[in-house]
Image 1: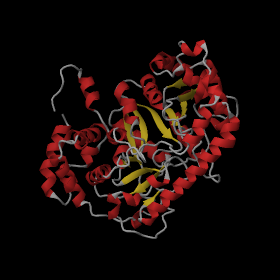
Image 2: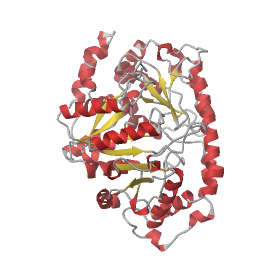
Image 3: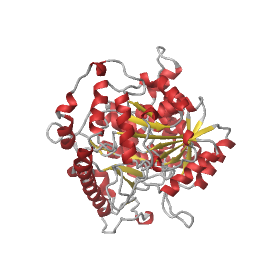
Image 4: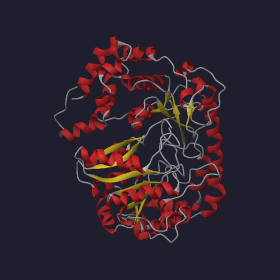
Length: 505
């Protein structure tokens, strides 16, 4: 692949960068499924968006109070967000996070999405080449959020998919694992500045208890680490018997100056296109530093007005939107769970978020990638474990917040390999998962890549981009040599070596 002379090395690196999540979404946006206009398009079960509440949102967002235009909305605002919006956000978070004391508007920052907040926080608490701890699997796009602008590395703390005597559940995060991860990072000569925690979790949909979260915060205090808590799914818990507890509900934080809580409208209010993310922190130095970057990531004045109107409408939120949204999410989750159970596919049964973490277990990352591409060729986007840096190959995230006929797994050919079963999968049972033969998928993958060059969405460069993502963002290469990844099919070894050689460039 030739390197254009018009860009810097960094520019060329950005131009060529595309992770698995970005690749699947890029194919989807140019060929979206539509019931009437494009029935042969791609169904997206990979991007975490709530597509169940358009009618509720349309009615509220077209209400006359949303159409207000004031001169101040057409002028530059405070780089942290308009004062009126920060006041509303502080009141909103005080109420729904059950804060023991009213939160302060001056401690709120509003930017165009949590992606921008992640990037800016990394820039002001880390120097280039510094590291931030994060348990794996995790929402993989955070890697780009921290790296592309700020050159900050994520140091992975792998969680085991198997529950054992020490861990009461699969993918169980403990303080001991964080301690081990921090020790390994220091042994590698890295300067660790922070820990990222997601609660509820993406992609596990795990909800940490107050005791667990407090222990994690104490770990950060002992080691003088910032902790960035992503609570973007805090209201997306659809089982009344399960409670979510925000960090902002803690009466006395172990280290309030290093505790920063993120929230946005993309998940809880099904408004990912609005692009509004919020941060709450008591650290004045951090607030001043973020204010210097705010003008690059501001939200339009009219949008700030609409968000303020929405968040202060408690009657609509509590009596209309949240109850109906949770009802629809619970029904959609139940339907997808039944589909997975009918195929004998195990999954984590969690009553939160917009997705299910399911076990389509493969032996190697290469087989997992082949299956992911097979789904894509058969017009469905899923997110595979590699996109979340899962240490065990074969896990996939299924987004269920969509119309029921989009969740019928039997319509997608790759699921034909799974043996129908009536076993219950309401709890995780990895050993019960069927193990399909993927040799044909692997061979087919390279035949298609070699023979269908006229189809840009199936190009060799696309696969190389995925390999580059793995090589540069994790310890994937050390753990998966070409010989290991070739598995039982030595005929692909030379091809795979060539791909790795190009991906290193």
